[in-house]
Image (cartoon, rainbow, N blue to C red; front, top):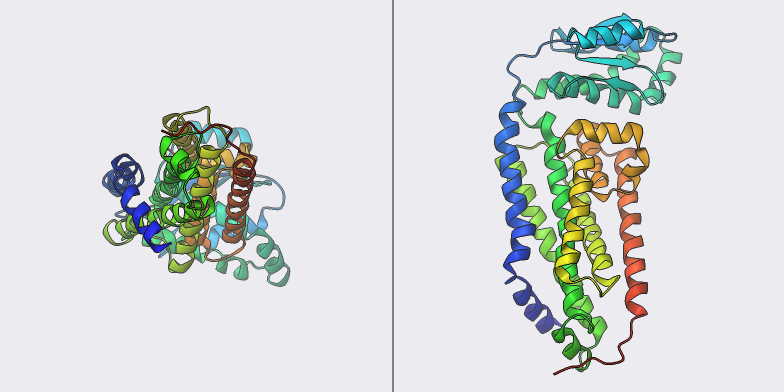
Length: 375
């Protein structure tokens, strides 16, 4: 088995095309994001964010929180409580950065993407996550003193933005890391091509050799996963140590998400590689690339706001998008710590992985070859 692992590893690592797409390209994209976003999200002096909150009943607890949340000696928000039409007019005239309407889910309307909008979205994401805790705290402390303490974390993130240029752009880097995890499927597609007797002459020879098919499949599976995990660690180290991308203090859970992401990419690659023999390897690679890039875009790689739009208007897409599962898991880990949202994304990703493996196993186990045509 060790000899087989060594042989297959040496053979795979010579594939320059796969090396480019799973290591060089993600590193180049990470470098590009670091160069562009580092200056775009620089905050020299924090300024209060002007927002409009649509006036409605039962805003007392929100008003208490917004009044007390500060960044240093500066209020985090300058809030105008107005009617819905007036709020839209203020946004149109650029007098406020966002319009907030308290509902389920909280509606945030912006007319552009920028630092103020990101701060607003981050704060109200946290508010939505902790709303139940707020209600319980308000019953015990009607003055709102306990409630405001729940939201000090958001202010601390804004404070850190003064010295850490990438905090507010972290979702872009998380998405690139998630995209590369899915790119690990390229190795799996290549393995399926080289192990299925009806797809390549090498696989046909392997099928009539004494080597058990399951042993060959296991060897490729181990190597595919190991290679991609190593490449993800290289990319993570570059982000963390060179670009100063913030992942929080729970790095063990970051590693867990990356490992499961590598398995998810492998499972999806095996699924695409095994489900049909009518599509050539290049075609399957193209399918893998197209799906991954679409998933990455919906997860916020091109524009963070798109991720929020998907969550608000098409939330079911977040439950079937593996790139978003990884991105949102890392995002929640950094902003909220280890909690329900992180484990929910982890469970979704594990479910996606298992479904892909089960379908692939069923497809592979039902295949038989009447004539191999080995020369």
